Length: 432
Image (cartoon, rainbow, N blue to C red; front, side):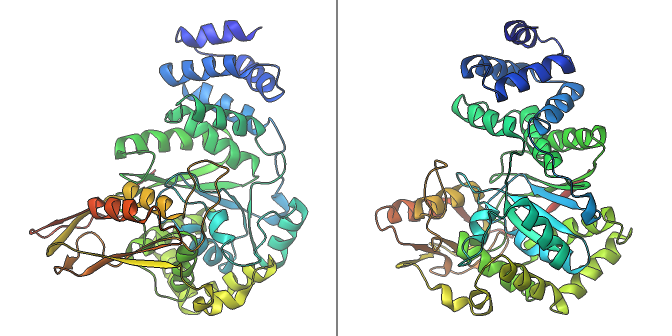
């Protein structure tokens, strides 16, 4: 068996065996297969696709390329993952609720890149919060308080890390088999018993259409089934930013307010849907409607907010910021965006808002870039709402004067107003 034959086989649209896939993953992870041959192989996959069996073998080979966490002593751990979007602070809100309801939360989250934000960056906006715990401390925290949120640690799915970086350099990121195997290999390596996936679609997501999202969701669900991990996929809309805030400190503040009962309707729809299915998979209740009531009561009783404070304190964060959001302060520049006309908001292009937020300093273009935790955008109105002329529709926050004008231009162009009433789209598009 050699890499040239494997490249040729996939180039010629033939199905690879488990042994051939294992050979590639092992060889590439160890550095025995060079980047230029791996690039040829990845490009062949990008152009010709993979069968469900190939994709599952590929996923499991990447998961087994490093350590696989054993979380069996924590009970039924249901992991949650989102395929990304703009203003997505769902993990910060949802996971303390789940922990407060008795579901063990042992979750590893990533950093933001480009117009999509990362949960790890948002957590680190809380002064002192440590995201880089050892596996031993990670598990100990879950046993003690029921929750720990950290960055990916240890030697988990190293093949995926190498391939993810390679795909980016050769413009092969948008391949459904490669996206599915990347996500699922990390979820399997992270040791979850069961998985709930938030598959976003629309302007501000990697999957632009519902059809693409469905294809990805069905594939990940099949991989989960074949890997022995019960998986539910929930397709959600990302046509406009989720919630009202985009940016790290701003999103943490919105999450805190949501846990205190002031949750925006679009965020609530996603949180309650994902949460009700997590509870179901965790054996906490088969009725989705009853589970939603449990979530409502958990928030109303302040248990979810108290669990969030407990999480922050346990991981070294300064809870005084969470109790008094004014302590975070404001960026040097606070610029309002006013409407040019009156009418109904027809569109707020999520991707453009995300790009503007990056320009303001809230996101990274390259992985090495530093971010400004204070930077971002607050939306004062959402799609379907009526606005008057010269009404404040958004506020930009930044410490970068040099990119402010460009960001303002992008935000203005991202918003469309019409004379006709606009029906707001449901956030939950499909359960798979």
